[in-house]
Length: 261
Image 1 (cartoon, rainbow, N blue to C red):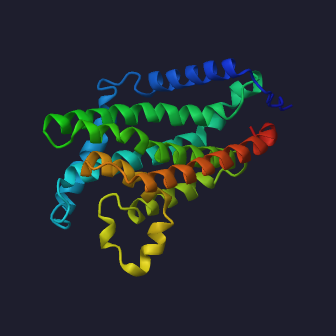
Image 2 (spheres, rainbow, N blue to C red):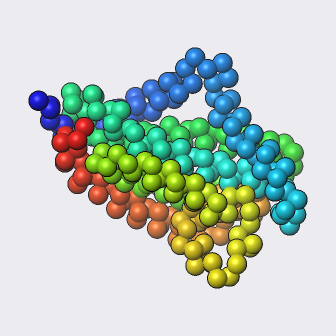
C-alpha cells in the first residue's frame, strides 16, 4: 500500500527552516570525503576554459580577453545545466521524506537551485577578485554582476520546477533534457560571439532565453561596462514571469505526486 504524499500548506517560518536545512545538507554532502572539496567547482570549469581557449582563441581573435569571456559563459551555463539535471532527480530522491513528513515538494528543487547558486557566487567572486587584482575589472562594474545574475537564477528556477515535476510522471524526460542541454550549449553564444551567427538564424538567437540570461553577466564581468538597463529589466521581467508560471504549474501537478512517488 502506497502511503499518500501529505501535501499541506506549511507555515512560512517552517518552510524557510526546511529550505535552509536542505541547502546546508546539499552543500555538506556534495564534497564529502573529497580531498579538494569546493576546489572541484573551480577546477572543472577552469579546465574547460583552458581547453576552449586553446581551441577557439585563434578562431575568434576579435574577442579580447577570450579566457575571461568563455569562463563567464561556462560558469553560467554550468550553473543552469547542473541545476536542471539535479533538480529533476530531487523529488524521487526525497520520496521517503515526502511520504512521512508534511513538507511542500517545491522545497526540494528550490534547494538544488540555491545550493548551486552558492557555488556559482563563490566561483564568480573568485573570478571578480582575480580580475580586479589584475586591473581588468573596475569595482563599479563588478557590482552590476549582482542584478545581472537575477535572470539566470529565475530561468534556472523555472526550468528546475517544471522539469522536476515532469520527471515524476515521465522518467524518460531526463534523457530528452540531456540531449536538449547539449544542443543548447552549442546553440548559445558560450564559446563564440553572437556576431558570428548568420542573419537568417538571428530569430533563434532572439528566442534563446539562455542568451539573454548570460549576456548581462558577461557585460558586467567581461566587458566591464555593465548590462544595458532596458535589456536587463526585460530579461528579468520575462524570467520572473516564467518562474511564477512554473511555480503555479508545479503546485497543481504536486497534488498527484503521491500516485507516482
